[in-house]
Image 1 (tube, one colour):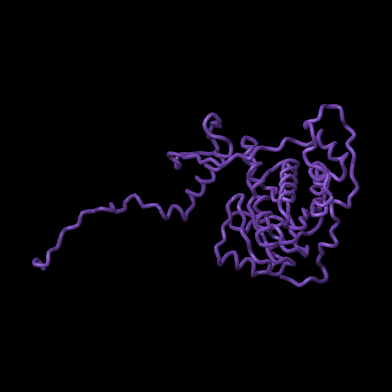
Image 2 (tube, rainbow, N blue to C red):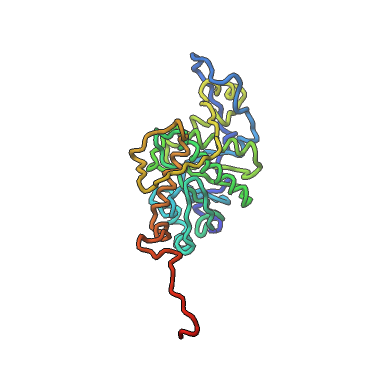
Length: 307
């Protein structure tokens, strides 16, 4: 971890959401979507949340988030910047230990040259409109697991990037709703981290977050009431289900029909991920070759008196 100094941004320099001025809803033409405010005005929660535009690698926090791929080496703006600032030690750590991270899961590494103690890596799901619910749930799991890991390691401050990378093709508004909703629910239930900073270097992303944040972090009772008109329904998070593919080598996820009568959307996505892992080179090496000798091949008996 790099010592605090010139070039870094301390947590004290990040304005809290509670310090921003509330906005008032002006469009009440339609009936509200909710009979009562879903997220109440809470100054304490608002003081633990911030939206910040800038380079996440410059923040002096206990932990930052990195959105990457299964090998933790994906080329995207956030990951490349973190690898660059952290120095060669981070890449050596990833290669030496052979880290792997599945979609929705997290991997913890030291911060090395960064101004943080820990890096929490996670893998964003890819968005497919056909499996909207599964993608929404999987992205929620990314944020939830990052927040839970930060609480587990005792991080007092956490810098969250927008986990949905551009290649994942998530609609920006959907991804923002998932991020804000998951952060709000975590802060309601957990005392740590004491501060969660949602950071992005992209001005349009920050503007979108600031526009939607009042729905989840209202700064007044009036703003909480106005959110009833704009706040989408909170999706029900069902337990995971397992889909068994009898012949995975003949399964084609691109042409498969949407069998919603038997399996839900999340099961279909999980099945595709399991199939991809089964086809990986490391997995194929574990399978017996076609010309392998039967395990119980009869061998000739050799008696001592015949020798």
